[in-house]
Amino acid sequence: MEELKKILLRIASIILITFLPCAGLLLVYFYTAPKIAEYYDIKEKRAVLDIFKLPYRTIEKRLLGFTFKSFDKKDIREVFKKNITVEEPSVPSFEIQPAGTQTAAEKPKGGKKLYKYVKDGKLQGVGFVESKLGYGYNKSSIMSLFICVEPDLETLKGIEVLDHSETPGLGGRITEEQFKKQFAGKKLRPKIMVVKGRKTENTNEVDAITGATNTSRGIESFLNDAMKEFWEGQGEIKW
Image 1: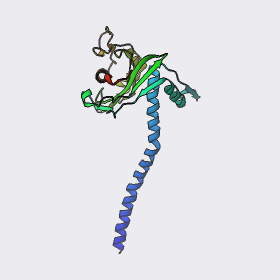
Image 2: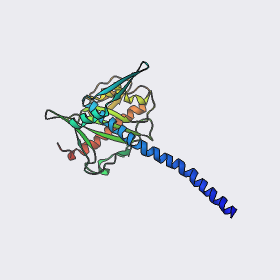
Image 3: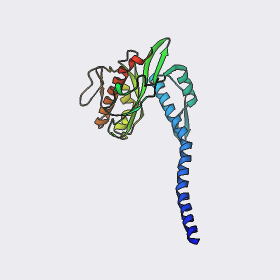
Image 4: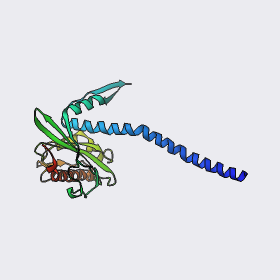
Protein backbone atom coordinates (compact mmCIF):
# COMPACT_ATOMS: atom_id res chain seq x y z
CA MET A 1 0.00 0.00 0.00
CA GLU A 2 2.83 2.36 0.87
CA GLU A 3 4.50 1.55 -2.44
CA LEU A 4 1.29 2.41 -4.33
CA LYS A 5 1.06 5.73 -2.50
CA LYS A 6 4.61 6.57 -3.50
CA ILE A 7 3.89 5.73 -7.15
CA LEU A 8 0.71 7.82 -7.15
CA LEU A 9 2.53 10.68 -5.44
CA ARG A 10 5.26 10.60 -8.06
CA ILE A 11 2.72 10.55 -10.89
CA ALA A 12 0.86 13.48 -9.31
CA SER A 13 4.15 15.38 -8.91
CA ILE A 14 5.10 14.81 -12.57
CA ILE A 15 1.65 15.93 -13.73
CA LEU A 16 1.83 19.02 -11.53
CA ILE A 17 5.36 19.90 -12.70
CA THR A 18 4.36 19.65 -16.37
CA PHE A 19 0.93 21.24 -15.95
CA LEU A 20 1.95 24.45 -14.20
CA PRO A 21 4.44 25.69 -16.86
CA CYS A 22 2.00 24.78 -19.65
CA ALA A 23 -0.82 26.57 -17.87
CA GLY A 24 1.45 29.59 -17.39
CA LEU A 25 2.41 29.66 -21.07
CA LEU A 26 -1.24 29.35 -22.04
CA LEU A 27 -2.19 32.29 -19.84
CA VAL A 28 0.64 34.38 -21.30
CA TYR A 29 -0.51 33.49 -24.81
CA PHE A 30 -4.13 34.47 -24.18
CA TYR A 31 -2.96 37.73 -22.58
CA THR A 32 -0.44 38.71 -25.28
CA ALA A 33 -2.13 37.37 -28.45
CA PRO A 34 -4.70 40.20 -28.71
CA LYS A 35 -2.00 42.81 -28.02
CA ILE A 36 0.30 41.34 -30.69
CA ALA A 37 -2.59 41.22 -33.18
CA GLU A 38 -3.42 44.85 -32.40
CA TYR A 39 0.24 45.86 -32.81
CA TYR A 40 0.45 44.36 -36.31
CA ASP A 41 -2.97 45.73 -37.27
CA ILE A 42 -1.96 49.28 -36.31
CA LYS A 43 1.45 48.85 -37.96
CA GLU A 44 -0.21 47.82 -41.23
CA LYS A 45 -2.70 50.68 -41.11
CA ARG A 46 0.11 53.16 -40.40
CA ALA A 47 2.06 51.81 -43.41
CA VAL A 48 -0.95 52.38 -45.68
CA LEU A 49 -1.57 55.90 -44.35
CA ASP A 50 2.14 56.82 -44.58
CA ILE A 51 2.38 55.76 -48.23
CA PHE A 52 -0.69 57.83 -49.13
CA LYS A 53 0.60 60.70 -46.96
CA LEU A 54 -2.53 60.76 -44.81
CA PRO A 55 -1.71 62.37 -41.44
CA TYR A 56 -2.72 60.91 -38.10
CA ARG A 57 -2.23 62.07 -34.53
CA THR A 58 1.03 61.37 -32.74
CA ILE A 59 1.72 61.79 -29.03
CA GLU A 60 5.03 62.99 -27.62
CA LYS A 61 6.00 62.64 -23.97
CA ARG A 62 9.15 63.86 -22.25
CA LEU A 63 10.73 61.93 -19.39
CA LEU A 64 14.13 62.63 -17.83
CA GLY A 65 15.19 64.66 -20.84
CA PHE A 66 14.15 62.00 -23.35
CA THR A 67 11.31 62.37 -25.85
CA PHE A 68 9.08 59.35 -26.37
CA LYS A 69 6.84 59.24 -29.42
CA SER A 70 3.70 57.15 -29.67
CA PHE A 71 0.71 56.98 -31.97
CA ASP A 72 -2.95 57.58 -31.32
CA LYS A 73 -4.40 54.16 -32.22
CA LYS A 74 -7.96 55.40 -32.21
CA ASP A 75 -7.14 58.24 -34.61
CA ILE A 76 -5.22 55.87 -36.90
CA ARG A 77 -8.26 53.59 -37.13
CA GLU A 78 -10.59 56.53 -37.81
CA VAL A 79 -8.38 58.08 -40.52
CA PHE A 80 -7.92 54.67 -42.13
CA LYS A 81 -11.64 53.90 -42.09
CA LYS A 82 -12.53 57.32 -43.50
CA ASN A 83 -10.05 57.30 -46.40
CA ILE A 84 -9.04 53.76 -47.33
CA THR A 85 -11.18 51.25 -49.19
CA VAL A 86 -10.29 47.64 -48.43
CA GLU A 87 -11.21 44.91 -50.88
CA GLU A 88 -11.12 41.55 -49.15
CA PRO A 89 -10.08 38.51 -51.20
CA SER A 90 -12.99 36.44 -52.50
CA VAL A 91 -11.20 33.29 -51.35
CA PRO A 92 -8.54 32.63 -48.67
CA SER A 93 -5.11 33.83 -49.68
CA PHE A 94 -1.83 31.98 -49.12
CA GLU A 95 0.13 34.85 -47.65
CA ILE A 96 3.53 33.21 -47.08
CA GLN A 97 5.37 31.36 -49.85
CA PRO A 98 8.96 30.14 -50.23
CA ALA A 99 11.22 32.17 -52.48
CA GLY A 100 11.03 31.32 -56.16
CA THR A 101 7.72 29.43 -55.95
CA GLN A 102 5.31 32.30 -56.57
CA THR A 103 3.01 31.61 -59.51
CA ALA A 104 -0.52 32.77 -60.04
CA ALA A 105 -1.50 29.25 -61.16
CA GLU A 106 -0.77 27.91 -57.68
CA LYS A 107 -2.77 30.63 -55.94
CA PRO A 108 -6.55 31.05 -55.95
CA LYS A 109 -7.74 33.96 -58.09
CA GLY A 110 -8.74 37.07 -56.20
CA GLY A 111 -6.72 35.98 -53.18
CA LYS A 112 -5.02 39.29 -52.42
CA LYS A 113 -6.39 41.97 -50.11
CA LEU A 114 -6.21 45.39 -51.78
CA TYR A 115 -6.02 48.85 -50.21
CA LYS A 116 -7.25 51.75 -52.35
CA TYR A 117 -7.27 55.47 -51.75
CA VAL A 118 -9.66 57.66 -53.74
CA LYS A 119 -9.46 61.45 -53.46
CA ASP A 120 -11.92 63.80 -55.18
CA GLY A 121 -13.23 60.90 -57.21
CA LYS A 122 -9.78 59.92 -58.52
CA LEU A 123 -7.88 56.79 -57.62
CA GLN A 124 -4.57 57.69 -55.97
CA GLY A 125 -3.09 54.23 -55.79
CA VAL A 126 -3.52 50.55 -54.98
CA GLY A 127 -1.56 48.66 -52.34
CA PHE A 128 -1.26 45.17 -50.93
CA VAL A 129 0.69 43.32 -48.27
CA GLU A 130 3.00 40.52 -49.38
CA SER A 131 4.79 38.10 -47.06
CA LYS A 132 7.36 35.70 -48.43
CA LEU A 133 9.88 33.23 -47.06
CA GLY A 134 13.48 32.99 -48.20
CA TYR A 135 14.38 36.49 -49.32
CA GLY A 136 17.21 38.67 -48.05
CA TYR A 137 20.21 37.49 -46.05
CA ASN A 138 18.28 35.24 -43.65
CA LYS A 139 16.75 32.67 -46.02
CA SER A 140 14.79 30.93 -43.27
CA SER A 141 12.89 34.04 -42.19
CA ILE A 142 9.78 35.79 -43.42
CA MET A 143 9.89 39.22 -44.99
CA SER A 144 6.70 41.25 -45.18
CA LEU A 145 6.19 44.43 -47.22
CA PHE A 146 3.36 46.80 -48.02
CA ILE A 147 3.69 47.54 -51.73
CA CYS A 148 1.77 50.41 -53.29
CA VAL A 149 1.52 51.32 -56.98
CA GLU A 150 0.17 54.31 -58.85
CA PRO A 151 -3.11 54.01 -60.83
CA ASP A 152 -1.12 53.00 -63.93
CA LEU A 153 -0.13 49.83 -62.01
CA GLU A 154 3.41 50.12 -63.34
CA THR A 155 4.88 52.86 -61.13
CA LEU A 156 5.74 52.39 -57.49
CA LYS A 157 4.11 54.81 -55.09
CA GLY A 158 6.22 53.44 -52.26
CA ILE A 159 7.01 50.52 -49.99
CA GLU A 160 6.90 50.00 -46.24
CA VAL A 161 8.68 47.18 -44.41
CA LEU A 162 6.28 45.48 -41.98
CA ASP A 163 8.45 42.59 -40.82
CA HIS A 164 11.96 41.24 -41.38
CA SER A 165 14.83 39.42 -39.65
CA GLU A 166 17.77 41.12 -41.34
CA THR A 167 20.95 42.07 -39.48
CA PRO A 168 20.65 45.38 -37.59
CA GLY A 169 22.94 48.03 -39.08
CA LEU A 170 23.29 46.10 -42.35
CA GLY A 171 20.28 44.48 -44.00
CA GLY A 172 18.12 45.94 -41.26
CA ARG A 173 18.61 49.33 -42.90
CA ILE A 174 15.81 48.45 -45.33
CA THR A 175 13.54 50.14 -42.77
CA GLU A 176 15.42 53.45 -43.06
CA GLU A 177 13.66 56.28 -44.83
CA GLN A 178 16.67 56.96 -47.06
CA PHE A 179 16.42 53.48 -48.56
CA LYS A 180 12.63 53.29 -48.80
CA LYS A 181 12.02 56.71 -50.32
CA GLN A 182 14.10 55.96 -53.43
CA PHE A 183 11.48 53.45 -54.59
CA ALA A 184 8.80 56.14 -54.98
CA GLY A 185 8.20 56.88 -58.67
CA LYS A 186 10.32 53.96 -59.92
CA LYS A 187 9.06 52.00 -62.93
CA LEU A 188 8.25 48.35 -62.32
CA ARG A 189 8.53 47.24 -65.95
CA PRO A 190 10.44 45.40 -67.15
CA LYS A 191 11.57 44.95 -63.52
CA ILE A 192 13.04 46.75 -60.52
CA MET A 193 16.82 46.55 -60.37
CA VAL A 194 19.14 47.20 -57.42
CA VAL A 195 22.50 48.55 -58.54
CA LYS A 196 25.81 48.55 -56.75
CA GLY A 197 29.11 50.26 -57.58
CA ARG A 198 27.60 52.85 -59.91
CA LYS A 199 25.00 55.58 -59.95
CA THR A 200 21.42 54.77 -60.86
CA GLU A 201 20.71 55.77 -64.46
CA ASN A 202 17.31 54.35 -65.36
CA THR A 203 13.81 54.85 -63.95
CA ASN A 204 13.67 51.27 -62.69
CA GLU A 205 16.92 51.36 -60.68
CA VAL A 206 17.57 51.93 -56.98
CA ASP A 207 20.78 51.95 -54.94
CA ALA A 208 21.77 48.87 -52.96
CA ILE A 209 22.50 49.07 -49.24
CA THR A 210 26.25 49.23 -48.63
CA GLY A 211 27.42 46.01 -46.99
CA ALA A 212 24.06 44.27 -47.46
CA THR A 213 24.12 42.98 -51.03
CA ASN A 214 22.07 39.85 -50.27
CA THR A 215 19.32 41.85 -48.58
CA SER A 216 19.26 44.38 -51.42
CA ARG A 217 18.98 41.58 -53.99
CA GLY A 218 16.32 39.98 -51.83
CA ILE A 219 14.20 43.14 -51.94
CA GLU A 220 14.69 43.28 -55.72
CA SER A 221 13.49 39.68 -56.20
CA PHE A 222 10.71 40.13 -53.65
CA LEU A 223 9.24 43.14 -55.47
CA ASN A 224 9.55 41.61 -58.93
CA ASP A 225 7.92 38.34 -57.85
CA ALA A 226 5.15 40.14 -55.96
CA MET A 227 4.37 42.41 -58.91
CA LYS A 228 4.36 39.48 -61.32
CA GLU A 229 1.64 37.89 -59.20
CA PHE A 230 -0.21 41.19 -58.93
CA TRP A 231 -0.25 41.76 -62.70
CA GLU A 232 -1.28 38.18 -63.43
CA GLY A 233 -4.22 38.57 -61.08
CA GLN A 234 -5.23 42.12 -61.96
CA GLY A 235 -8.12 40.83 -64.05
CA GLU A 236 -9.82 40.19 -60.70
CA ILE A 237 -9.48 43.85 -59.64
CA LYS A 238 -12.68 45.88 -59.73
CA TRP A 239 -12.12 49.52 -60.67
